[in-house]
Length: 87
Image (cartoon, rainbow, N blue to C red; front, side, top):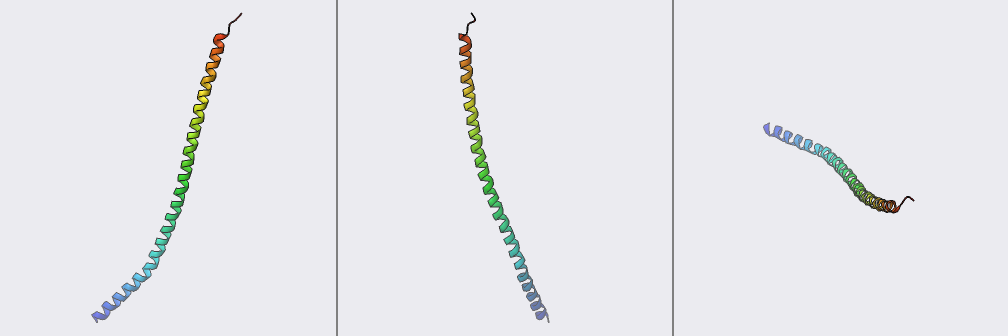
């Protein structure tokens, strides 16, 4: 009697284990899809970050060039003002 009970319990445990495997595989598949989506988003964000970094460098260089040009223009104006004499 006990052997039949143990065999029945073992069979039900095996069936429960088999039924749970499909759910586990579905969850793993879902998580795998989410990881793939996140990896794609991270790649896109990295590309955007790199583009912004290069844009910032270009803007910084343009600002430095403008500052140098302004300083050069100011020195020309100062030179013109020192040469000006009122008659």
